[in-house]
Length: 332
Image (cartoon, rainbow, N blue to C red):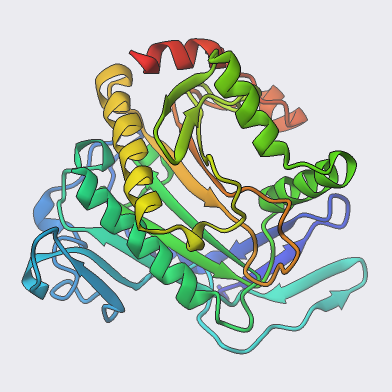
């Protein structure tokens, strides 16, 4: 069967989807529905160079180390990408009411050294190196002419979509604005035009004042359970200072973001018994010149519940743990 890799636009909603049939060739390292990974000896990320991964693009030594043999973060192209690497910008093709773009882009893997230590068990310095790696690749890929958006994601556990149990994140640089990001940006822009203020800054002022859904804060960041959470125990992390772009954070902010992530993920382990989860970074598109209205942030979604007919059929998320209860539990 012919491999298809293309972005397709829904003619009703206007949302883009990615059809990528080549991903079926990717091996699966989790067995069954429960996160029971295969042995460490079979892990393709334990030693990327020996397991025939793509050439390492960038690496970071462990805190206090300098040699490649002491690497903590390694970055390389995904061996089984859902998009095709290309510097050629795909034209928009129309066939009747349908619109298509060839599925080009960049997909990279950011791997940490330890096979077993996820974010909740990493030191703050180790997490900070991961954040620095995110920034570095975002800045490099934003220079690509065909890239309209860069999405950094992390899947932990099979219920969150991870096929390799070894801790790793991914960077997607693609020629479209993803639907969820587009809605977030357009909502932010609309609020700014109406009120002449950032909607997320208003949210932060309210949450810090009321403290009902506030979980943790340090000098630079606020961790909270959003008022209209989409899943139980959803977490969002916002910079206190209004900034549109994640890639522009400085050393002090990297340190404080690492602190916030260390706190929340260690509490996930202690309080929620280490659930599967996804997290991602929403930031302004690299080509968006007038993004002053936007406030970058991180979203963390534990995979505790399973979607049913109401969620899938109506697009209405049913959350069984109130955000106020989430904050109370995770503040402990």
